[in-house]
Each structure stands twice: as structure tokens, then as C-alpha cells.
Length: 166
Image (cartoon, one colour):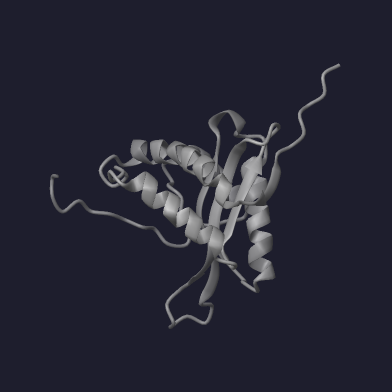
């Protein structure tokens, strides 16, 4: 009788994980490009810029940069997040923000994304934050199912208008 592989381990990312995170990021770019090819067209320098962004987050104590490691230690998913601030006019100003969540295509629907989000929410609570925010595309059926299942409810709609044909 075959035994199932152990579930991926969720842990803080290190600088050594940056190349694997950037490789997984390509999955996110592909998904976004199908939603809106003009706004989600990466710049020529995007890979290096994203890698530098991830390194900076890893170095920030309050940032939340998590990886999911599968058998053999490959990074099969990651989450980037951290504290953010809303307008100073609001009573609840400091919130936890989830910037990116990516799980390798062959690993989806196995609870990895959920485990990454739950770990991030626990970190936000430890930081004394009372709310968490994520942006997702309602036209992405997987995201439109996933985030509400975790209790996230739409609050505002972000809308874009092309001002030129380029």
C-alpha cells in the first residue's frame, strides 16, 4: 500500500529561496496576462526587480514571506505580505496585506494555498493587526472561489479605463 507524501512544510523564506519564488512568480504572471494583457505585460526588467523586492521583504522583520516546501525541498508555493497602512483618516489604519499567493499548477487544490494564508494571518495577528486585505481578480474563477472560502469578502472594486490604444 502506497503512503501519501507528507504535506508541504510552511516556513519563512530565506534569500536562498528567491530564485524559486521568482520561478513560481511566472505562474502568477501568466494568469494575470490572460485577464488583462496590457496592464499585466511585464517590463523587461521585471524579473530582477521582483527578485530585489522579495529580497527586501525577506530582510524586513515585519514582512511575511512564506514558502511551502514539498518532498525533496522544492518550493511548491509562496506568499508575500506584510503590514500596510490605509488612509490616516480611518480608525483602522494598520492592516495585514497579502500581495502575492502562488501555488505550482500541479500542486493546487491540495490545501497549500490555504496553509500559506493561515500562516500569514497568524503572523498578522501576532503583529496586533485586526484586518487583512487581498486583491484578486473576480474573473479568475479559482481566486473568486478561494478567497471567500477563507472568509474574505469584497469591499471595494478597483476599476481601470484605458486612456489610449497603445
